[in-house]
Length: 391
Image 1: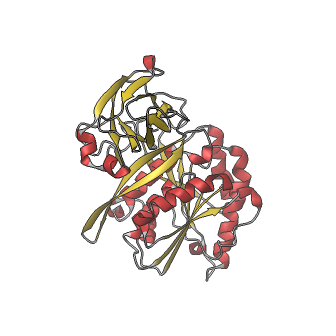
Image 2: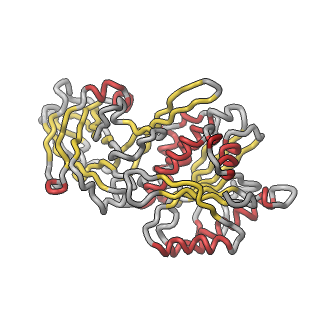
Image 3: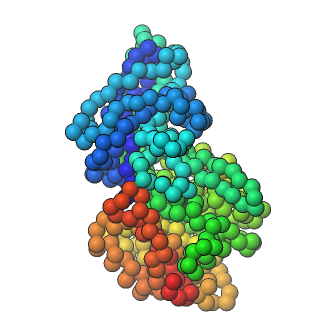
């Protein structure tokens, strides 16, 4: 389980250059149904760009906004705009509950051992400053962004990639960050190229696949939502397979495509050699998109179990992907089946019926790890064994 900073009362799209703006910060779980119960200081900083938010100077200029308490969690808090702000400029507001030992208070380090222990920082969309004689405070912002740090280390070369993922502030299920996708992104960041110490044969096999020199690697994510898992995975693979063909399909319903396309385009410099494509895939359609033909090496899923009524369609989609992989591979054996990687956080015990249903089409999932976050319900990491046996 993770806690997220967000804006219960969001910023306006525009404001007078000499005015104050009011916000109501919130610290809650991904469903916004469980609020953070302890007291915690919230800090803020104004920055003209995302680059400034990610810089060390953002932490040094941060000021205390308030102390979070559930007893006053609906309080509106006025904030002065930065003194150097001028009409025509754009400014972003970033909120964080900083770790005193960290310098990247407004950036989420996916590889950190303390990942998810503190509420995740949030960044507003730009507020446009207008002259005071114009109509100000027009419209409320409907999107937020978060920055994620992905440390890469391959062949002695160390570099750090910062991903920017946009979300909707509405309750559209396919346009938000959810615990399972966040946990899986962190788990993959800490896994790839570093699995030698693991006792799990399945984990080692996954690492070998993602860092291999095989000529072609084909990956599909079902229900990608914001696209964070596919984007993070592409950035990680890029450092190991810069000159080899890697195709990643980030699939979801048509309603999610605009956000997915934005996030993929925004972060394209992080995976320049990876062919990451947004793709519409409706599990109820009864067919696979024409682009998906032949063998698929890896199927990734995060938080696809919240709607048990969708299980028959999900299982049929997985069965079609298995059949497509068999038809595009020789000889026919368990090795032709895609590896399945599932991140799951239980919301209802009935969701676990999926495991038994998957066995009817020859898919057996094995629990390989857990990601704890801030406590309560962990995110479970499951993989198909595909004949490799128990781990």
